[in-house]
Length: 174
Image (cartoon, rainbow, N blue to C red; front, side):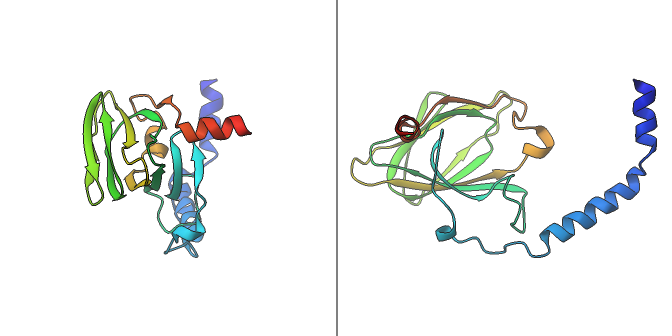
């Protein structure tokens, strides 16, 4: 098997392949979107809740792909899914009030606040709660797109620990 691999690898000039990759990437980005408008994005019902993705690894028509960037909306009195992930994410609260639990500790927030979710070797467990019974909470969040170079597990495991209520309801309604 090692000899087969060696022979297969010998068929490619890997240095030239880097330049070919560069050229493909340049071509893919030539007409890429510089502006992404909220009204052009669907509000997705996911296991984490209601999300609108601006930058995502599977969205390939944007000028950059080195970040994940999304908006999340939490309906009045509801909560997001509970998630274990590496951390290293920044959230800006656009509307509403509530709190985030991180590893069981409660951190209150309101519109205008920035929430920093730290990078931890073993990951962090987070969930977001809207404490307003009448108005939705909205935030935007970003983190580096390490998914391609470190895999989705990002060294700590990536697990959906609890689904958002809206997702469970949508699944039940089919």
